Image 1 (cartoon, rainbow, N blue to C red):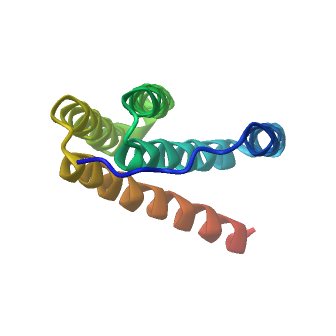
Image 2 (cartoon, one colour):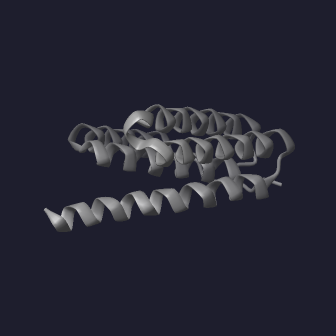
Length: 134
């Protein structure tokens, strides 16, 4: 079953949104994808922890939207097999999140989180490697 999660207060939520907007405005293309991963992980965590159906639904909607955005950034012509593999991974994460929502299955959501965490860590490491090379 899902656990309770603290929901940010109005002022805290507004500050978080301002911070996110500032990060987006100053981010590189690589940084924008990193932000998508961070927000996706936040949405999945909220989905897993919340006991309120409305909040879980909002978190699911946000997570699915971000997964679609990540999939839309893939360049299948230049990325080839890597882009195809990432698309399949994003599809599996979508499937697990929908299963988790439909069946209130925390394990399915946690599995989606683990899959995305691995990709996000690799993406972050790639960015750090590029920064060192510069």
